Image (cartoon, rainbow, N blue to C red; front, top):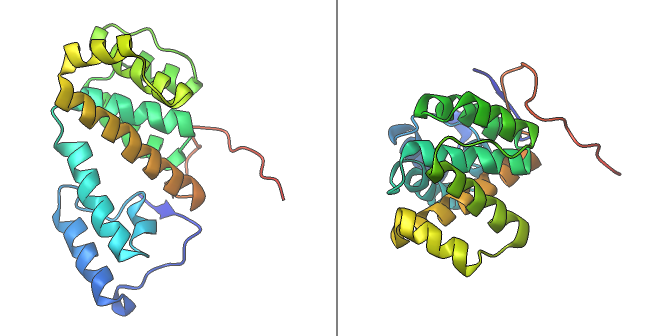
Amino acid sequence: MSIDSRLSSLDEATMAPEQRRVLDAILSGPRGNLDGPFLAWIHSPELADHAQRLGAFCRYGTRLELRLTELAILFTAAWWQSQAEWQIHAPIARDAGVDEAVIEALQAGREPAFASDDEALVYRLGKTLYTTRRVDEALYAEAVAAFGEPAVVELVGVFGYYAFVAMTLNVFEVRRGDGPLPFPEPPMSD
C-alpha cells in the first residue's frame, strides 16, 4: 500500500550511515517495514532509534492483551484524528477482537457501547487522561485492580507513545493509500 507525506523522500543510496543502521533495525524488527511515523523519524535517526524501540515495546511487549492495546491506539487515533494511525490500526484492532461497532463509534467520535468491562475501562482511562490530563483516585484504583500496576503503567505508555505517533503523522501529513480518509481534515488557517 502506498504511503504519502509532505516529507522529502529518502534515497537509500544517499542515506547517512546512522539512518541506514536505524532503517535496518526497523526492517529487521517485528514491524518489518518503514511505515507510519518512521517515515518522518528516520530523518532524525537518533529519534527514530529510540522511538522505534519504545514503539515495539508498546505494541508487542506490554502485559495487556493485544485487543486492549489496539483499543487504546484507536482511541488515540480518533482523539487526534490521525488519518494514517487509524488507517494502519483499525484493521489490526478488528483482527485482535475489537468489535466493529466499537470501531465505528470511535471513528464517529461517539462513546462506544462496550460488551466487556476491560474495554470500557481502557476507554474511560484514555478519555479521562486526555480530557483532564489526570486520573482520579477511584479510576486509578479500578484500573490497578483490573490490570495490575505494571500494566497500568504500560497502558499510560501506550496512550503517550501513540499520541506522539499521531502528532508526527498529522504534522507530516502521512497518509496510507489513496482511498477516503477516516476523518475530515480541519481547515487550516494562514
